[in-house]
Image (cartoon, rainbow, N blue to C red; front, side, top):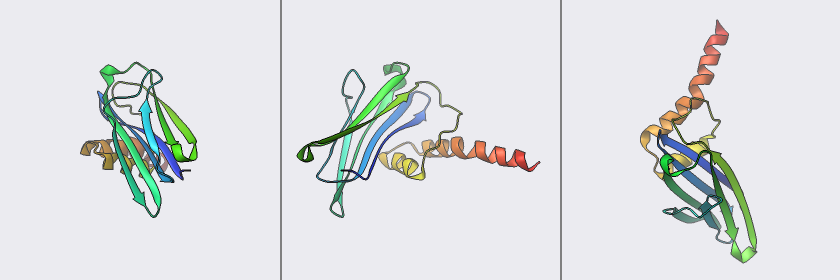
Length: 143
């Protein structure tokens, strides 16, 4: 199966969200689908690359908060039909303004979100949300 499978929600501004499903190290070629419990999402873009004999796949879509319930559930399903294999990830999303609560995204998550075509400010926003609270705590601890 795959070596890495993730579902990322990247809030780019106060009224949209990028939903990104990615899998690395899969063989044979995987199929990724993005959905809610009610339906498959429309307008999803797909990328599939063969790297060192293994496939990397990405499915992504940008959605308007106004079109989503609160909370919204996203489901990413990875299928490898030739291997009769399927696995899924689920995530809950709360539409609305960008949260000031830090989310512990990995560097790989931030790079993937940036590579998918996020607005340039979103990576800065994510970095600010993750790093600034930690920096503030460190500075307060010094006093």
